[in-house]
Amino acid sequence: MEVLSLHLGVSHFATPPAATQALQAALSQPNQYGPTEGIAALREAIAQRYQEDEGISVTAEQILITHGTKHALHLYLSCLLTPGAEVIAPAPYWFAFPEIVRLAGGQLVSLPANPAKHYALDVQALRERITPQTRLLLLTNPGNPTGKVYSPEELHAVAQLLEEYPQLHVLSDEIYDGLVFPPAKMRSLLQFEPLRNRIAVVNGFSKSFAMANWRVGYLIAPAPLLQQSTHLQHQLIGGVSPLNQLGAAAAMHNRHALWQSYRQDLLPKRQKVLEAIGQLPNLRANVPDAGYYVTLEIENCLQAANPRSPFQLVEEWAAALKDQQGLEVLPATNMGMPSAVRMSYALPAPELDEALSRLRAFVS
Ligand code: PMP
Image (cartoon, rainbow, N blue to C red; front, side):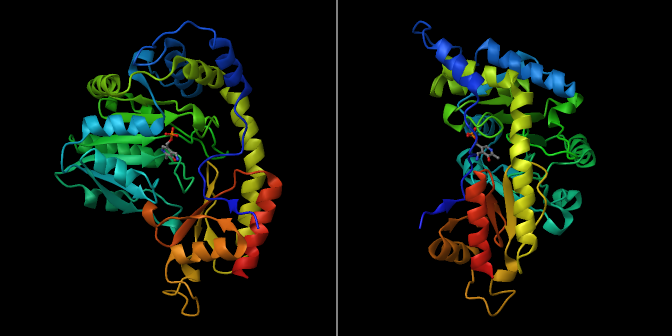
């Protein structure tokens, strides 16, 4: 039986043709290094998108093009954190965060979000976690794996915290921001212009542009941190391939058409997955506002809640699902949610149908 991989963080969408064409046209360029901070065409395209789509003013000089979003996270955190610094992140979070924070000398402090409250930001619990060592609040908006898009009220509460705690910075990872389903509406944290001396955003082309293999991301950060990050990237690795950046710029100019086509594909799939889950005993999931993951709560399939279950841990449940049905999902234990799994629905319709019938067979 062929294993269906719903655990992966890549979509089935083809590379944007505009990107491929721009890359092909650039291949005849002479042998040269590009600037460490990124080529003007891409930095300007990114600045333009914030201005046009959200009325937020970002200049090209405020943007550093990085080797993927992960690298943007590494650079920023290495420059911001000092040994022992604490980074608060709402859970569930992307599984790579704890280690990326640790490598930069910090420590991730989990702030569990309640699925029954649609993963709302618990500002009271957040306040209780702030200590003299707290340096950063790390948000993912839209969320991975939750697909949650923060409301204007939640974002204002974050801005309020920044005003109250002068040592606090906020980083918003917005890598899924092109994949938001109305009526949810995404607003970048960059909207709080007076607080931008402590607000940073990372983003990239792997998810919202289906260009994971191009390794292009970006960092928008307060000037001193951006300068240090640029210096670090210069010494470590140099600038991103200008050829790949030209492809990314072309994709960015084409964003509205791309995002509409992705949403059109994903929306009925989201519906199908949620309907299937709704019919299965012991499984629960929230409607994701964005992205292509469902966070499947399987608490009632585990022994603690259900003594008849053979599974103690979510890992055991996921392993049995793979062994018995050839369906691979991702336990969310290392995302700070040990009673859930993440499953992707960014796959061709026939595969998704097959995956859902295997899930049904396993649970029923
Ligand atoms: N941030 C989040 C929230 C992600 O889900 C991912 C990829 N899974 C990344 C960053 C890394 O993206 P990139 O491929 O651009 O390094």
